[in-house]
Length: 102
Length: 224
Image 1 (cartoon, chains in turn cyan, red):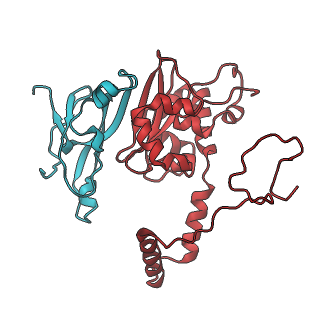
Image 2 (cartoon, helix red, strand yellow):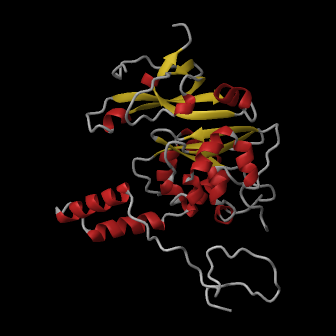
Image 3 (cartoon, helix red, strand yellow):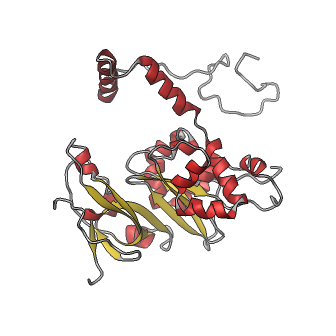
């Protein structure tokens, strides 16, 4: 896993992102059910100490945190209850792969 | 009628006696199983912290009392103010932490986001990873909020979950589920009920239920 840094570019609201499909060990605050799913930045929340480092009692880098909005169709596919309903979750920057061309 | 049994058996209305002894005394099964690994760990850490003088049992008891004393009335006061004060509502939606502090609620370092229910959108809060909950404004979470069933089903089939709470939403309403996965906590700003024109913020706060601020319910209607 890449070491998180604060210098990652700030993602603008509505930017398309994909949650990384890492299967990293340890204390991870990226839910499994969202890994690999594509969504859009709902808002930037500022930088917060990386929980993966905090869990190991290491000095924690501040990492930008985003609220990402997914459609239920994207998260659950054909099993979605109502495809246009949405799910918002907070995802740290190092778990997000920007999809829009720079 | 035995004490603690607040209904009569004369009318023979069927009712649930779970947790009630045949003689009408409430009980729950004794917890005679062995302590779990984490229960032992909690006791060990607590006793060590006390032994080393890091914290006193009185401080622990006082903190538990503080946590128990918080109630959804705090959140209800915030919601009622937002219903009656458009400028406050704007501040609440822009920065709910700061707006709560402005009302005198000590929310510590809590980062709070208020999400607004409208005719088109209904919001519901869940924490799939653990049980994150805006305790400073709503008190301790209800037991079901921490259950695996609520946490796993709300992100997958929110409409069915809400229907089980008695809230059936039309297809024209978009459901927005908020999974508090990291450092934010969420509170739903429910829509102000009809027929409440002219009511004071104090009277309106009485209509704001805990569940309406989680999103699993709606505020009461006046007179209901």
